[in-house]
Image 1 (cartoon, rainbow, N blue to C red):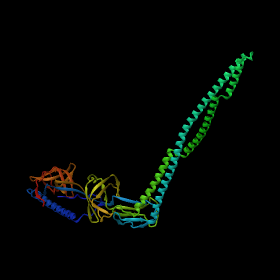
Image 2 (tube, rainbow, N blue to C red):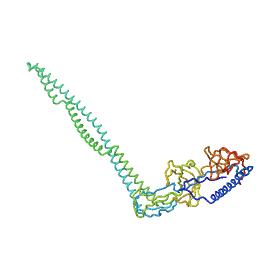
Image 3 (tube, rainbow, N blue to C red):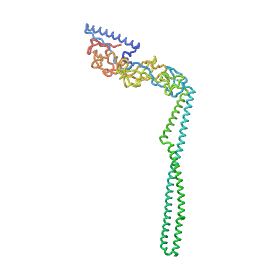
Image 4 (cartoon, one colour):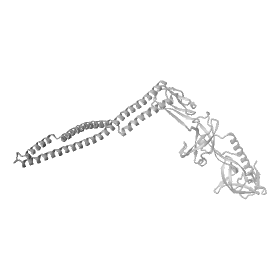
Length: 483
């Protein structure tokens, strides 16, 4: 047998008892009152007739299924909320829903003006073209500057070497000219000395030869062919050096201009990044436009809980337009007191009743922090996920919830009313060989009618159900099985 546990809630949370349960409890109360009267009758008679033993009703300890159920109520809420923001700053066309409307997945919520949307699309495309064109132009100029800079650097290196080589060669030629001139001058000086030695013989042949040699030396010093050739070569190389230096100055100017106009690595990165960002922004706008060209549609079945879109208005990008709460993913939020918290666990199956319809669900979340309810009591929030939601579910309404917290199959069970408690714990009275006997027991889970007995009893034991005043352990009694 499967029995449900009594609802454990605060007075402010009690719900009306169903008729079947109420009838069952009334029947038990009447039966109990009659039993007490009968017992009292027999106890009184026992005072007059010592040979008559008191009568107690008994029931057999049996095996059965007992299920513990926690009954409570909560609020139906969605598990998924989608807020739609305006992705484009374009005039709103038609708003096709209103707050509170139920919509289907794919249904159009609102549209943008077609002409304004087309203009915005063209503008985004032009921005991409302008950005790409500007970047390409900058890169062409940059490549030109880099080429000119490279040319200048190469030429300057060559020119510097050419100028140095020419200057060295001119120095060598000048040195040769000087050496040659010095040699001819030295030779002329020697001839002058020799002429002085023969000056006392002016008519001699030697004197006459020396004069001729001196004249030839003087002419040679002034018109030496080798010296003149070297001097001509010096002039040629000096002209080259002048030309090289003029070209060097031109290359230095070109290098300076290229370096000033070309971009450094940071500027190049900045230009590339700015171009990329501009293109990304424009492409995002294009993607957003393409996404809403056929209107903004619902991502899932649900209810419009907030609507800000207004026909004819032009929203700023990021403005909230519509809020949609799903009816495909629905939960019930309940609150559990500290007394019932230990019974709740994630994964437990539940029965959820909403507007007369019952749905299956399960515990999916237990909050890690307690809050205070309207009565000031600490409660813990628990989420119940509904497995099979349909269009009959309304968000925000109250739901009745039964949580199947525990179940014991083929356990030893006894009615709850036969269990007694004192400082030593739970116990029952059994009738053994006509004697009333106390047995301490260890209980398990319980429903609203039966309780699991883990220790202290065995199947078939006769448990006394009406041990009243005047009866106690060790007394002889007459057992009458309860019908």
